[in-house]
Length: 410
Image 1 (tube, rainbow, N blue to C red):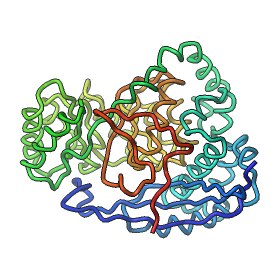
Image 2 (image 1 turned 90 degrees about the vertical axis):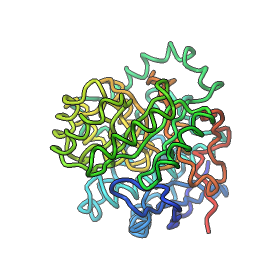
Image 3 (image 1 turned 180 degrees about the vertical axis):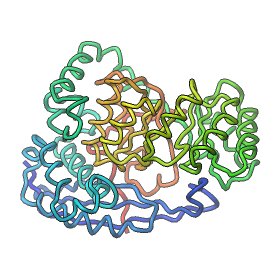
Image 4 (image 1 turned 120 degrees about the horizontal axis):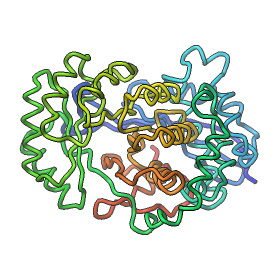
């Protein structure tokens, strides 16, 4: 079996053009990844990514170098057989833990390393990660996860029982492997786009087969957001789902006013209306704008915060992202937790959908999460060796071994 020989890193950044990626808070973004490159003695490479907006990616790479040292010489099968224990030991690094814990640079480094381990594991077995995960027993799945700090709401035994409970009905959901998983277009309405460009993009998305799309909001003048939202609604009609994303722009009083003003256009959700760690503010907003759900996850950094959001009823759409959490392992913990409550799942895709196109197949088939849709962002397609295959608005299941994270690196 492959044994890990070395762990290297790469600081990956791409400057976006013409207003792409812009929102109410991030005005001039780059897309970046702290990349982990795990080389095995078999010649295989595991490639892991953690999402950044460019600046500071080098800090994540330095943390990857420090955290990754302990994995050298480990057999990948032996490593993954107890990965929950391994991940906890990495997260509790006695020197780097103070820089977190479980968030920030060190947690992003852990995400990248974790995703690289899963990628190498799937490549060594010659299967895409969605198939590897679906072929595992519930007990093998839960051994991948660090359940610490969740015990009072989700024990390992409860997680196993939950996974077992949906095994008998899996065949009812496996049709998704033939039809693909529906996507939504998040590149329609970047904040700096003109009205004309947004309308043209919205119509083009419908023509491409998308039945849902997202518009960036978060202006100081709520009427600016209302006007553009109504403009998109008029362009695409009432049958298309429109999501609104404020990217944390508003303090709570302003968020309440803005969300009430936007509620009339019947958004499918309102995303990140305020500071992402403020559970009580999101709980208040969820009460005020119901039945429109509040969506969060892009900046929710660990399973403990997710536990708090779910306990408080402060989230209606779980946008857990394996490039913000501690990789695929912690993502699995969160989606099992979300299934227990239950709350609907639509991941944020800091990976541009490359890994999450695998993970939503698992969450739908193995956990009976509703097949809603997965975010689609096309701006880095040419940088991936195997870019996601989106056909008629649907992500088609990848067939190449691994997590689809191989990059054309400089």
